[in-house]
Image 1 (cartoon, rainbow, N blue to C red):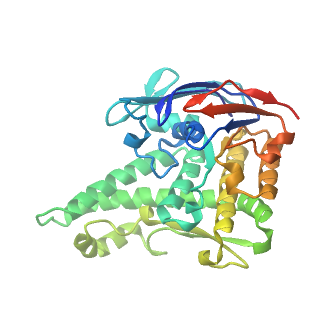
Image 2 (image 1 turned 90 degrees about the vertical axis):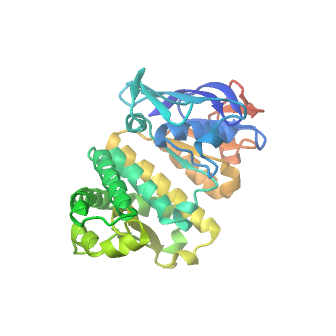
Image 3 (image 1 turned 30 degrees about the vertical axis):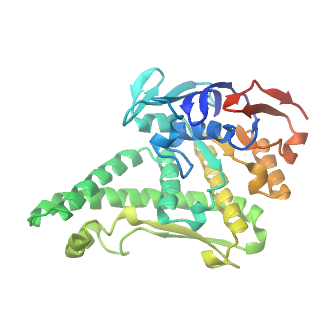
Length: 364
């Protein structure tokens, strides 16, 4: 798939931008703070319903002085079909649109797939488990049709059980039973979808991470489902109810799941340098994109923010070459045109003070 048009209003410093995109590599060049990362952020919003930046709270996304923001994308799929997606915000909630009609956020996200490597991506390896669950569930969402419904049902049951746990008055045990049964049923389903996805992802991880960090040896993928193995989740929830009452939240379930990558020559996460964490995270994102392509028949859009600052020249060249070779649409930012792109065909956009100029086309 590729974005053919990206229209942005009121996002951070971008008051108004209407960007036409084509095939291949697109580079957004400008000084720090010019707004080039916000272009990638807009594409990511359409795919994830959230920002990849740590300061990505909805109120922070708004341009200073603006009362609303909107992002619109026109997406061409491999089969020629065109999807039109949009997210707008004026008030407390996102307004999602698909092909001109009101839609759910899930419908918009399912239409647009974007993976992004950016300065905070090392948190996928070095950060908390929530980052890794988000990565995993985004991938599962795009290949398992039942995932979104199961996830919504699980979240509703979790919210209800937590509300009972926080009640100021005694709660009859039978009030927990229906919600715990729902958590168990949907949690088991989510667990098996995640396991199936990780099994499919592993060979892609071995290829991408092995190519980026061959010196670390073979990789091992570990997954913990969030409650003890060989036990039914409903049984565990019942056993843990008194403990959960004292803590005020549900301590077991798929919302507590975790996965990790270890290496033959770096068996613990602490053995990795910051540079190796970044390359491992990059390998995970490229593997997820490759699995998406194998399942869907088209590559997601790949964003590389501040490429030259995040990777050395050899890894920049390898990554750009790989993505160009498979025909993925790539959006790159930098303060100048990265060296590996100077010998490739690319669309170069200059970004200055929140304005995106029409592109110049550089041909190899």
